[in-house]
Image 1 (tube, rainbow, N blue to C red):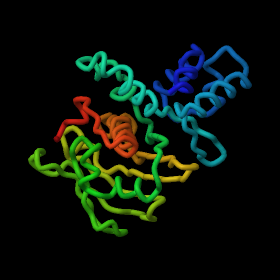
Image 2 (image 1 turned 30 degrees about the horizontal axis):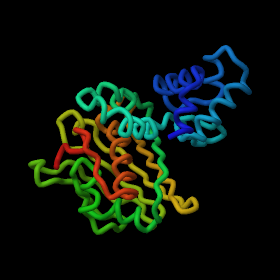
Image 3 (image 1 turned 180 degrees about the vertical axis):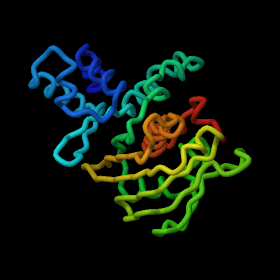
Image 4 (image 1 turned 180 degrees about the horizontal axis):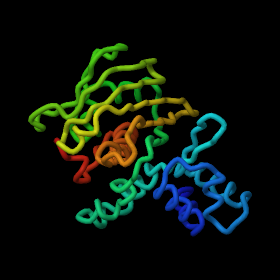
Length: 250
C-alpha cells in the first residue's frame, strides 16, 4: 500500500491517471502533449506509476501504450474506505464504475500464492464463486469447449463463452458473452485473457479484456477490480470481501 499512496501523493501523477481515465491506452507522446513538463519528467512519473501497479503498458506494433490499472485503487478502497463509509462505497469508487473503453482494458495484481493454486482458484467453480459475485464458472477446460457462468440465486445463466486457448497454469483465453442484464446482452462477444507469471513467492496476474466496442457498457469490465481484489483476499487470507457488489449473487 505504501508505494501506491506515495504514487498518488504527487498531483502530476494523479493528473496522468485522470488523463488515462479519460482516454485509456495512450502513448508517451500523446500524454506528453497534454502536460507542460518535459518528456523525461512524464517518463519518470509513468515509471513510478508502473512500479506502483497503477499503470500497465502493452506494445502495439512500434508503439507502447499506457493503460490505467484501477486494481490497486480498489484495494485501497476495500482496506481503507469501505469499512468507514460502506454505504457510499460505490460512489467513492468512480474509477471502477465509470471507465470508458477504447477497445481494451488491462488489469494487473500481485498475489502471494503459487501458479497452481491461482489456476485452481480461476477454474474451480466453487472457489470462483467465492470472489466472483457469488457466481461460479464451469467447463471441461479444453480448447473449443463451452463454459458457463451461473449462480443458483441468479435465475439463469450470467454468462457464457468458449475456451480459445489454455496452457495450465500460465494462460487462459476465453470468449465472453455477458447475460446478466439486457444492456450487456446487446454488447455481443468480447474476449478475456488470464496470464499468470511467477514472481518470487508470488504471482503476477494480468487480466486483459479486449475486443470491446468503443464506448461499450462499463458493466462488462467495471467489476474486474472487485473480482481481482476478492481473489487476492481469499487466496492470501481465506476471507471473503463483504462489499455489496461482492455479495451480489450470494
